[in-house]
Length: 254
Image 1: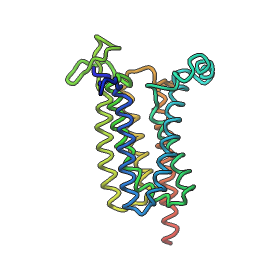
Image 2 (image 1 turned 45 degrees about the vertical axis):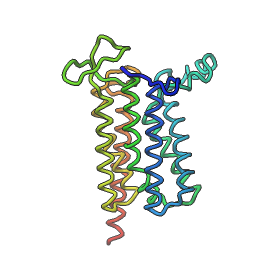
Image 3 (image 1 turned 90 degrees about the horizontal axis):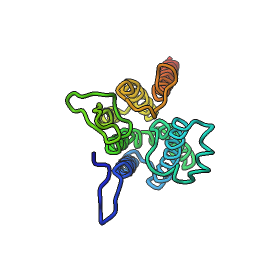
């Protein structure tokens, strides 16, 4: 399994490279969308900076809580220092939720339209995530359940056990979701509704994909993994917000 590449004599982990590529791809797409939906480009850069900063912090924070537990985080940070914060180990949902919070605060700070920012940014989320899951594949993390059929892979840490390449499947599904959001955006649904559609579709996909995950790092509460519980909460919140919006529109029409 190719975990890194050498460029100009420097060993570069593909996990970090794919993560950086995802952030850059999503950022460029969002800036392009900003021009199209009349969001000031400088404002969009600030919004993205806050979203990315909050997202990275949230993704690492969720990972530390999931792997170490709340009580063990401070002792590990004291003993290992910054090394505990650098390198592999991020939870997407932590990045998504905190990144959304950071982007929202940036939107308020720059006094931009929430709907317009959503139009520009939301389709970029699964695009960037697709690159990130490729990084997981190269790093051998977030691996799938034992599987020796067509397309199975063997990661060094699990050899000789073959597993299902769930990272590649999620990357592909994210690209399909990216295409779907582009189609829906052209139909001019509201930006907020586009965001809710993304949350709804991805939460369902993620809930189902978790049954193909085989790593124990993701954590579990009862019969469901941590990500499945978060998926259910996000799905429930999205449905409630959809229903509220529908009632509001009906009351306006009356």
